[in-house]
Length: 493
Ligand SMILES: Cc1cc2nc3c(=O)[nH]c(=O)nc-3n(C[C@H](O)[C@H](O)[C@H](O)COP(=O)(O)OP(=O)(O)OC[C@H]3O[C@@H](n4cnc5c(N)ncnc54)[C@H](O)[C@@H]3O)c2cc1C
Image 1: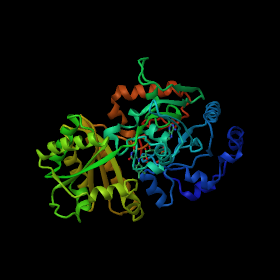
Image 2: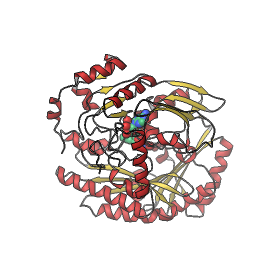
Image 3: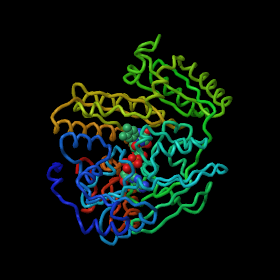
Image 4: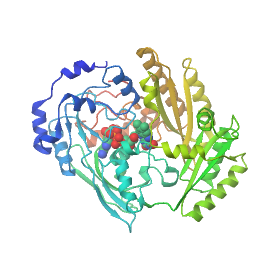
């Protein structure tokens, strides 16, 4: 059941808890009033937006919002929470879209945004050490001022934190060249549920047993709280050379992507749009032949090298019917690449959501066809559009937008849930991964066992039980057991 906002507003702050936390972080950094708790009761999961627009909260309000300013304060808050069996949700900027930061009952929210310093830039080793709560846009700007880029530029750059990138195992728009965040993180500091400090010292590579770093990267706050990261950085590129192409169909466009990646070319950006997503981007493009699909590639780095890579890619795409197009769609993408298209649709009552999965090159055409058919069959007026970005030698991310027309809330939620079930179930059936970069959060819980396999899911639960026996760290996420001992099955509350 979703609690009404009014009922939540009546639940007063917890004075004893606030006092105890104020003893660690200071009175000014414990927020226990209704507006602060309300603001921290959601992330950017569309289900949370659907709830808010109907005067509901997606889960429940947190008991308080705590704002530590140092790694040690994070450790002391966790030690206190562990001793007092108080669940904790780490909170970056709340841009997660899978409900990972939504409280389910009794949690305090640990807002990390005061940990916002760029600690060090080591130009010789090509590394930057940054606190986890630093805003992504500010981090990139601070690096740019010294001639560097971190290479991780998600669409949510300006509304997310570095810690959130690591926690969700995110991907930026230049990931085809620089990799996902897990390919960039070289060291980190984190705190376990009982306040234990863990430091993975930055090292180029190591061979000392399983990677402890990877316990935290992608854990979404369930296994520990990341307070600092050391990431690779890169000299800002001398040139960024776009290649705007159209292909006869998605099969030839995807085949081009496969051959480019397997030829070891390294476009920073590879984006191929299906016919639905091509149409609005090319409606004013002179000479564009209707029915063809659009691709944006960008080669970057040293100009001579980037130019050679672009020429080699052109040879590959020529052989597949690729045709060079005007660069207006590239310029438009560049100008709007950090904006979200969802808010107007959400505000007008639509049930709009996105779902990103990973598929093998050999299955992507079939995945697109079957998923499109499934979504369009849900109801009259259903919308399905897709593009492929984040390409690898073995496959790519298929990023889908699903939009259902305004309808009574119960019907909309039921169809929205059905859409997710279709997309995730078909992904597993066709050998893909149910999540490429948004994480699993609360809402992907129901498909985590299918993704990980029974043994894998049990292993993840055992790791959780061993590291956090009191189950205080973001309980009920990633398909793990909630405070009531039951595995979360996603959805609401
Ligand atoms: C418009 C829009 C565009 C987006 N585009 C992209 C994109 O291009 N690429 C991409 O990868 N994602 C994208 N996202 C998703 C989202 O921005 C990312 O998942 C981002 O990494 C989340 O960062 P955050 O700081 O907002 O985390 P939050 O939303 O605050 O938290 C996300 C999860 O991580 C946990 N967490 C947060 N900080 C920490 C920490 N320091 N230690 C441990 N756990 C922590 C939280 O408890 C929660 O479970 C987009 C979202 C929106 C709304």
